[in-house]
Length: 111
Image (cartoon, rainbow, N blue to C red; front, side, top):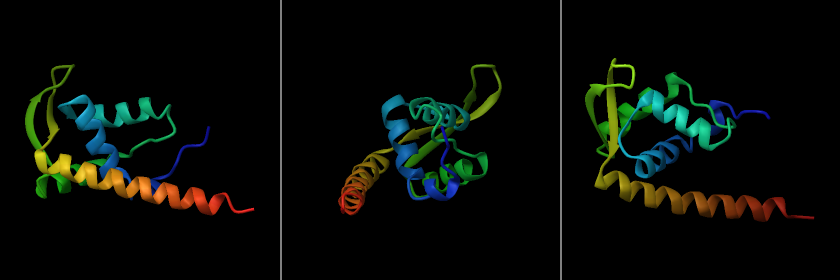
C-alpha cells in the first residue's frame, strides 16, 4: 500500500499528534511516530523533520507540555502530554476535519 507523503500530512499533523496523546497519554516523539504508523496500518509515516518542529510549536502555543524522562531503553527522552488548551484545539480541529471530509466526499460523489 502506498504511504502518504508529508505534503498531504501537513494539514493534519497537529490533529494526529493531539489525538494520539489524548488517547494514549504521555509519550516521547518516536513513540508518537510509531503509534500513528501502527494505528494507520503503515499508511501514515511521520518524518522526524516534520514531527519535532510540530511538537516544539505545539508546546510553544500551550497545546502540549513537555518534560524529560527515561525511555524504554533507559535513554533520555522528551515526553509530551496534551494540555487543556490542546484538548480544546483537538475538538476544534476534529470538527474542521469532519466538515472537510464531508465536503470532499460530496464532490467525489458527483456522477
